[in-house]
Length: 175
Image 1 (cartoon, one colour):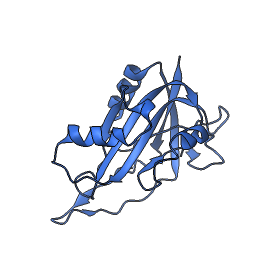
Image 2: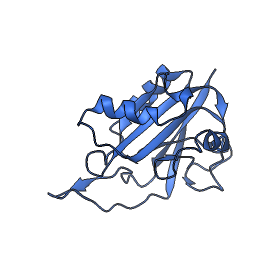
Image 3: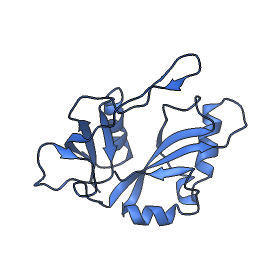
Image 4: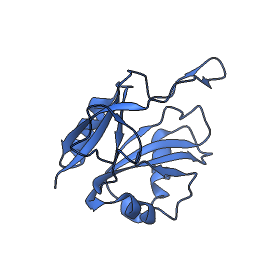
């Protein structure tokens, strides 16, 4: 089964990632980009999705969204619900933010603990992960978990599926 990953690139060239500085690791201010170019990359499974995601590492002007852009959209688009359409996808990224952890500073243990908070369908399957830029700076486990699904699911289906989890714990990013 094939699907697409929609990649937005800031038209201004501004970084999208969080940066921290100083002895107290304060977040540096950044401007939120409003205009983007769009690229849709074909993926077939978890390994091809991982290839795309790894190719985007070190590209702070790019971000991935689950939505899609209509084929008649202009070359530069705004990142809003009028321009970006919800689209069922065969993949998802679950963003875990601040999951309580009082265990050792062991990334594998933290990852396993985070996955155990998800519905059972996500617990015994492969995923791709990366810790967020604020992991180790802000409290709790902060990790992005990328899964290949056995069928395309809409954002609404994903929200229902993950509804037992607290809003603070995760965010499912459409835009």
